[in-house]
Length: 177
Image (cartoon, rainbow, N blue to C red; front, side, top):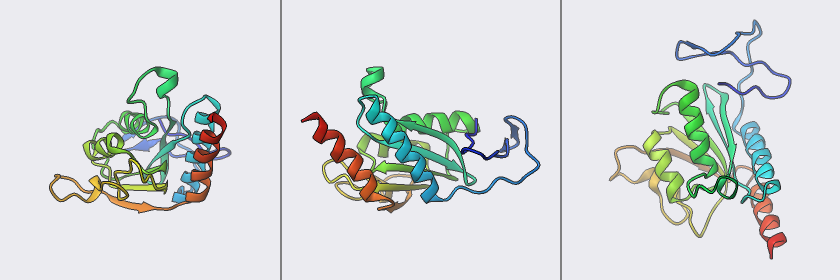
């Protein structure tokens, strides 16, 4: 299922699969920055729910096909990271487990679990906001994305709206202390 940004109707055909009504007006492509705004909204929703504020969005052909936030506490599932949930939803939405043409936009640098999910899904590109110096696995502590020993590499861009993403995390943990 494609997710429409407020006030916009997105095309409903992906990879030859009709997912709903096709609008006559061409839908605008979503930029990385616009996708990060949505990911930040998801992160804020996570914080409101008592979850660590991380949000993720998956873009396919420039359109949002999945958006999620952390749900570890809510679900009791230690793997319910925003990235993993968004990648699961994206694969279901496009009907393909390989996400070569997808971009994952996430507020915090993926951890080893999420970097492994990116590798398993063969995501073409990751854009993240704040670096994670303690557990980052896309360049800060480890770099799963460019490890030539693996059978798939991923293009990574970092620092998009990093200050906003870091502030959400800092404020969340400061309130918990």
